[in-house]
Image (tube, rainbow over all chains, first blue to last red):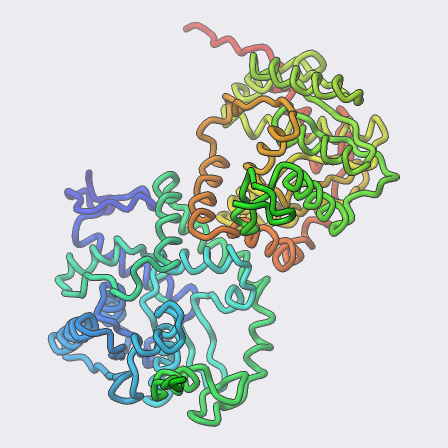
Length: 308
Length: 308
C-alpha cells in the first residue's frame, strides 16, 4: 500500500476516499479536511476567537491541535462533569495538552460551581445520563463562550457522531432537531455561534491523528454512556459503511446539501420566541431554563417518605 | 399469552403493538389495519375498481384476500418476469388463489409479449437485476391498469418494505424519490393512482395472515434478489426494531406525517414536464420511455466482436 500523495509506504488507509497515506500526508489530509469544512461553511475567520470544547478525548484534542496548526486563535474549555475517576483522568489529559503547548484552558466544575454532577442529575431525572450530560454541557459551553467574549464555540463532533445523530433524528423524524443539525448554528441573542469543524473526518481518522501526532488522550468511553442509543446507531452505520464505504459521508453531506434547508424554517421562529431564564438569564421558552430546572432537581434534598 | 381482544389463548404476538392475538382476532387485526390505511389515506372507495399487483408471494395474495374480505372490488394482475422456475411456481400460486376464489386474474408475460425476461434485461444493462425488474413491473402495472380501466393500482408493499426503501432514500437524500414515497401516489395524465394498503402491517404479520387464512404462497425469495441492497437495509432495520420495537413504524409514519410534504413539491413539477413515449405512449421525460429503452437493449442481437 502506497501513499496516494507521495507514493511512500502508507501507514493508514481511508476506504471512504479509496486512499492510503504515509504519516506526513495523513496529517496533511486531516488538516485539509478541517480547512475545507471551516472555509466551505464559513465557520470562522483567522481574526475571530474560537473556544474549543475539550473533553480530553481524541476528537476534541485533535480539533484543538488542528485549529492551532492551521493558524486559528483557539483556546480550550474543559467541563468537569463529576463522573468519578473518568472525569479526573479526562481533565488531566486536557490540562497536560494545554500545558505542553502553552495554551489557555478555561475550566468549569459542575459539582464545585453548581452543586451536582452528571450521576446526581441522572438519578434526579430517572433517565439515561446522556440527556442530562448533554443539556449541561450545551448550557455551560454557551455561557462560558459568552462570558469570555469568544466569537464562536467549536465542538469535536466527527463524521461518525454526526451521522449517528442524524440517523437518530431521521428515524423519529424529529423535525426540530433536524432543523438545528448543521455544521454551523448561527449566533442569536443569548447564543454564541456553534461550529463542527471535524465533520469531514471519521472516528478512526481522529484516533490515528492523535497517535501519529503524539497527542495523549483518554481512550476509555464514558462509563455512563455504555449501551446508549447513540452507540447502537453507530454500530448500524458501521455495518452499512463496511458494506458500502462512503455511506456515512453521503448520508451526512447529502442532508447538509439537500435535506437541512427543508427543516430549517421552524428553527428560526423557535429561537426568536425565547426569553431570558429568570434564574440565570439564558434564553429559554419557559420561565426557568432547562439547566436551572435540572440543577434544582439534582440538588434538592432527598424526599423522606412519611412512615405510616 | 392471552389474546388482547378476547382473552382466549394467543397464537401470535405483535411486539410493536405490545399485543398478542388468537387466530380470529389476529385476522380481525389485519383487516382493521388495512381498513385504517385505506380510509385514513383515502386510497379508494367501495365504488372504485382496484387492480392488485399479484406476485404469488405472501404480501400480494394477503392484500388481495384482505381487500375482498373488506368488500372492495379487487381483481388481480400477474406479470410473468421470465425468472425460470421461480416465475413458473409463483404464477401457479397466483392462478390457484384466483381460481379457488372465483376471481379475475389478468396476466402479462414479459418474454411472450415483449421478447425478454428479467435475466436478459439484467445482462443487457450490466446492473443488479432488481432495477430492470422494478422498472418493468412499474411500467406494466400502470399500462395494464389504464388499459383495463381500473381506478387504482394496489401493491403489496408492507411496513418492512416501505421502511427499508425509505432508509435507502434517506441515506442518499434522494429528494425526488422521497417526494414520490407515499401511501398514495395520485393519478396524473398517463398514470393511474397507486396505493399501498399494507403499510401498517409487517412482513411477519403477512406471513402469519396467509398461514392462518389458509393461503398458499411462494415462500422462496426471488433468486435474483439475493444479497441486494434492499435486503441489507431490512437487516439493519430489523436489528433496530429488535432493540426498540416500533422503530420501523415510527420511522415510516413519522415521514408520512412530518417529512414527505417537505419533498413533495418537486415531484409535481417533474410529472407535469413529461410527454408521451414515441414508441408506447407512456409518459416520459425523454423521447423513448425507460421501459422501451430497456426492451430495445434486452432484445438487441448480441454484438459480435470483429476478429483481428
